Length: 103
Image 1: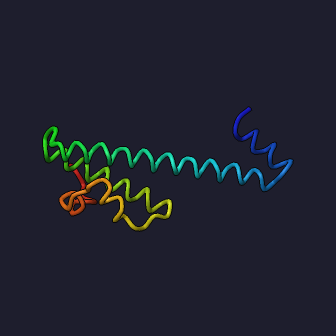
Image 2 (image 1 turned 45 degrees about the horizontal axis):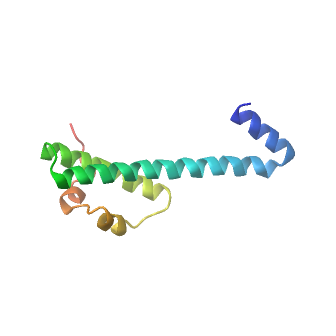
Image 3 (image 1 turned 180 degrees about the horizontal axis):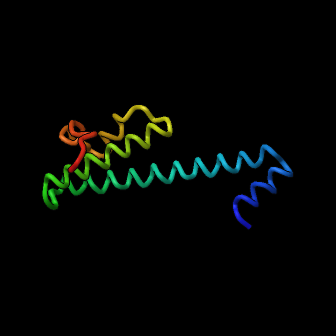
């Protein structure tokens, strides 16, 4: 049975239940996406602080990861980023370059 079949069956029994299942799936996907973005920030910031590689590349990777994480946070309703900036020790150098397109 597919998800579509399940939703159709739930709707037949309880129309509001089908929407609740879908909303639950959406919330789970948002949480998973936010968690993956956070893990990427943690990894890239650790590499940048350890200077484990080519600094310009590490800096670009960190900027891209932080930007994507901030976008994900804002999509789920978190507008303030000061706590995560402190928690992940995101440097001013990274923050100043957010949104820069890498070529």
